[in-house]
Image (cartoon, rainbow, N blue to C red):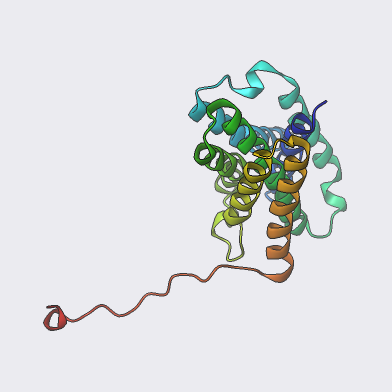
Amino acid sequence: MTPLLLLDYSGVAVFAATGALAASRKQLDIVGFLFLSVVTGIGGGTVRDVILDAPVFWLTSSGYVLVCVVAGITVYFTAHRLESRYRLLLWLDAVGMAAYAVVGAAKGLALTGSPVVAVITGILTATFGGILRDVLTNEPSVLLRPEIYVTAALAGSLTYIAVDLGGAPLVSAGAAFLVAFIVRGGALWFGWSIPVYRSRPGRRPEDIP
């Protein structure tokens, strides 16, 4: 198994687990667990492949859906042992996001040769599954939390592209994963954030030249 394929399956598994954890917080039945596991696990990659006009990855290999099912069932029987499921959800989401930023950027670069497209597909792959999970479960969206999220996926995608141009795919995958996870992990641990927009009073009509 290549490093990128390993990251791909790992990203699917971890994101699927976060979907199941969200289901546990809503006290859903096993069907709800499996549904959220699958949607969260394959959501980002599906959007990526549709945009790239490529074969949707889970349609060509049923292993991805099976990984989601296993993750969902595992969490269904073990989630009650966890003290802080939301905290674990956020950290697992960070791992999945980092892995998927690499996979998305790699696939976008391989299919188009465009670094710009690779960055976009890296970000979409890394974030869309988590966004779907939060919308479906009516949880506070990770996208709207104050600490860094999309920026971590951006950093991982850019790192992959920069290192991959040097012809070292294994090194580029590892470096990109670490950068994305460190940025997101630092945001969770230390509260790193980017300054937000602060509205200002509008000008009075008589002040406009």
